[in-house]
Image (cartoon, rainbow, N blue to C red; front, side):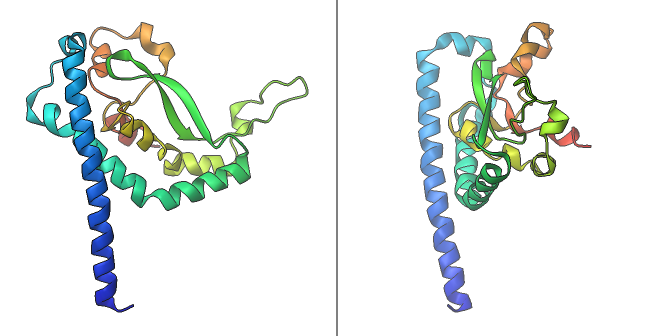
Length: 196
């Protein structure tokens, strides 16, 4: 295949991915408006401010996550197979987290720890169960790639506050509870500044 042919193929693939992502964005936009009409009580908690938050953010999240899902699918598949071979089954780890308006959702990630147990059947400490491969997944944030499914399901956004564990809900001050006025994010200030 010539260089020109490669460019044409790449452009066609890009157009295809963009079309699928645009359809996902349009569906997200319509669903968001339907939810808005159905549940006035949610809107009373936090009124979307401006055109971006009301009409652009959710469709953009779907557009980006659909594109990412297609583009990164080879990485997702290879990582999933490696998790299966090195850490066992299940490949995915889910955990309940509070999201938009404190609605509990299941956060999806790749497993990073084994299920090793002691003689009595109790799980070993986390530092023992976290092997070299699990540390690599965490340090590169590859364990968080499946969260694009949470974004597509409307549980999360691309950018937003880090979704903390459910047990912290009773301890939020009134000001801290405003973190639930928006969807939690795959990335955000805490995720970027929390690296060591």
